[in-house]
Length: 126
View (cartoon, rainbow, N blue to C red):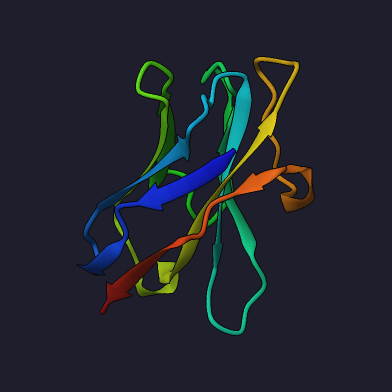
């Protein structure tokens, strides 16, 4: 599964962006999806994740209440809605997917994921 992220860009602090993650040539059905980010000089960190049913999700503490992950399985796309953006949210954002037997499982560890996108840059100016 090749994942493609889109929607990154430059936004002012307090603004919003919506990232999309879609597979190339395959369905995301029965794949749990996670979002991660990496800032220059930093390790990749977990942002949030959603089960393949969409019924369960989980977020890192510093994005909780600001970011929301959703999925439209009919459109074969997972979204990361980012509101109230801060300069410290500046990073390359990656989506990742793993096939899951349980429809309500999500995964917070990057090592759990099988497929990764190439990333999309989000820059938040102060």
